[in-house]
Length: 407
Image 1 (spheres, rainbow, N blue to C red):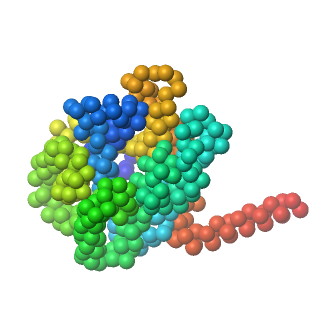
Image 2: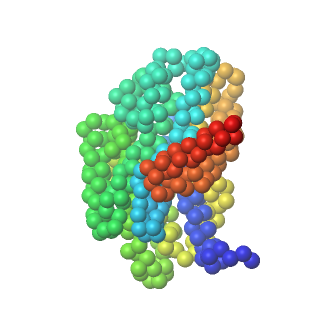
Image 3: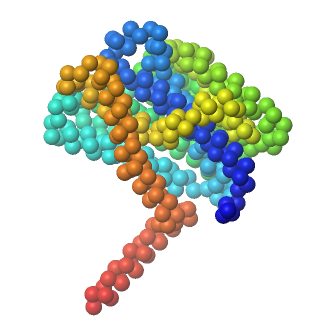
């Protein structure tokens, strides 16, 4: 057997933990799809499904799960890089994240622009919106403010992209804090706690004084989950100092935190709960969840066969492409030019989403990840400036070689 530097038992436990993290994101993306079902099935029909209406209103709940896990994984990676190399380049890390997200976002915007230019029938309903301004604010990641202030002019089929804008800018803030304070962990911990308190209090203030719409769409009011996740990553090394003691309880805590997610879904369905006590409790529960999932020696069997199910883990790994590409597809199918019944249209929307997401994963996501792991991009680890100089030198050498061959 080839040596990998990782003991088989340790690798197995790590894989199980990763599967749980992927699985919880898979659970969240399924809830996002359900929460957007009203687009194709009809808002009136969904409102009538009283028994499962809470599932159809779970988008904000699911986004909090995404943000906490994303903030945790991103910040843990930053701190590991800092501990491993003794340095951290926030510009490089942000650029890599920007490229990965933009590969999908820019492609989607280009597709929408082309379909709008050829006056595709399913886009006729958006002729009264400002496509040019919408595209500009999306590609510059200033979409949140534009949608908040120009709700009627913004493209509704691209409204969901507020999420990636929030992710990119808040992760940028966390990158900066890690760069400035990462070598002094107590100071970093204090800065994140302060930022978290400010955001949590501010989001409640905006909801109470400016209304639900401003609270839902503003970047500052949706930064909470990412900061909670970053805080968990900073707290983790302190807990790992007592790992042998905590491991005995981590599994039970993980099961309890997972079970608590069910009643918390009902607690945050209403915006007053989401921006109130329910939102606090959901963030705290997910904060505990990611820490317990990381500290558990072996995830409890009940979670391995629920949250850790392979289909959920796959959905979690595909969650970015599923999120970005499903929403406009739902809007276009809602025009229903095929005369299908609502349930047929809904099943078609889900099926086409899977097909589109798989294509995006293969044609965009994998190629982007492979590109970012290439030798040329590895030069970025030494900094953007040195990488640009090296690229310029390489280009100059290639030109000289072509000239000499031409002679």
